[in-house]
Amino acid sequence: MILLSATFGGFFANNHHAKAATQIGVVDNPMGDGSVYVYDAPNGKVISGRTLPNKSEWQVGQRVSVSGSGVWYEIGQNVWINDYVLKVKDAPTTPSQNQNHTTTPTTNNGIVTAGDNAVVYNAINGSATGQTLPAGSQWRYGSQQQTADGSTWYEVGASQWLKVPSTNTPETPNMNPSDQTGISASGIVKISFTGANLRTAPNGQIVSFLNPDTRWKVLAAQRVNGTLWYELGENQWISSTTVVTDLNQANPDVVTVNENNISATLTLTSNANIYNGPAQLGGTSIGRSLLNGTAWHVSRLTTVNGTSWAEVGPNQWLNAHNGQLSY
Image (tube, rainbow, N blue to C red):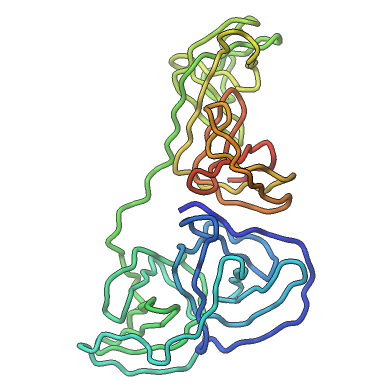
C-alpha cells in the first residue's frame, strides 16, 4: 500500500450537505493500488497514522467544495477525504447482514467511536476484512443492528461493519503483526576533505578520526532524526554528511541504502519528475511530474551516494531532494 492523496491550498466555498445513509464513497487511487491519507478538515492536515485501503467503501456525511482543490467528503468525525481519491455512489437501500442470526435493525445514522483493536468485518457476524480502525477514531455509520448476543454492529461502509460488544470488551483481531522496518546498506564511502569523526554509535562518543580521502566499506546503516549513519565496524559509525561522492571518476565509490516498510510523508517543495527507479541505479523519467505543495505517502526509500529516492507508487519514484520528508 503506497500512495497518498494530494494536498492543495484554497478557501472554503459552496458547502453542500448529504445524508450519510444515501451515499457511499469508494477509495479509488488514480496512482495505483496504494492506501490514501485522510485529513482533519477540508483542505486540512494529514491525520498521522491513518490511511484507507484502495477500493474500500465508506459512508459519506457532509460534502464541502473548496476553491482550487475540489470536493471534500466527511467520512467520520473530523475525518475528510478529497474527491481526487474518493468516488461517491448511491448506497444500497438494504443493509447487508447474515440472515442466520437474529438482528434488530436500526437506521439511526450517526457517529460511532472505535475501541481498541476495532476490526472491520464484511458483514454482521461475517469475516474480518483485514482492516482495523484506530482506537478513539470516530466514523459515520449508515445503519446499526443488534444481534442476539447483545452486540451492536455499525455499517461504516458498504460491506464494512464494526462490532461493539455489549460488554465493551475490545476484540483481538486474528492478524499477523506488521513487518518491522528493514534497512540494509552496502558499498564503499570516501571521507570528505574535512575528515570524519568515528563514533561508538549514531551521535555517540567520538573514539577516533578518519582522514580525508580515505575509503571504507559500509556494513550497515541507521537513520536517526532524518540523518543516515554508516557502520564501518563494530561500534564504529560515521555520519553520511562526512562522506563525498565523485561520480566523475572512472570507478566512482557507490554506497546504497535501502529502507523498506517505512511510513513517511514527502511534501514537495518544487515540481518533481516521476522515475521508474532511482536514477543512479538506471531509473528513467516516465514523462510525468507531481506538483509543488502536494504530499505523498512513502513506504520505501533508497539512498544512493547521499541522494534519496522515495517510492510513492508501483515503479514510481521521486527524488526526495525535491521535498521534505517527515516520519
